[in-house]
Length: 82
Image (cartoon, rainbow, N blue to C red; front, top):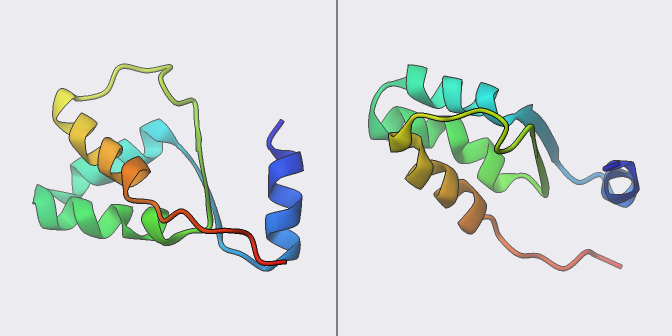
């Protein structure tokens, strides 16, 4: 389903990150503390395309909500280079 969106980005040599939401949240929780969590999500924020698979399928720890919101909200909006 995402192939149509990824093909132009990959052809442009952009950075694409794919992970399950649960895997990202687990890494954030294991990182311990705000600084560790920020370090874990930094690559996701910097990527050109972020695919969070299985978003909303599993219940997450309530303290993760704001961090996940930050990952999504602070992603830069960029126009694709022509």
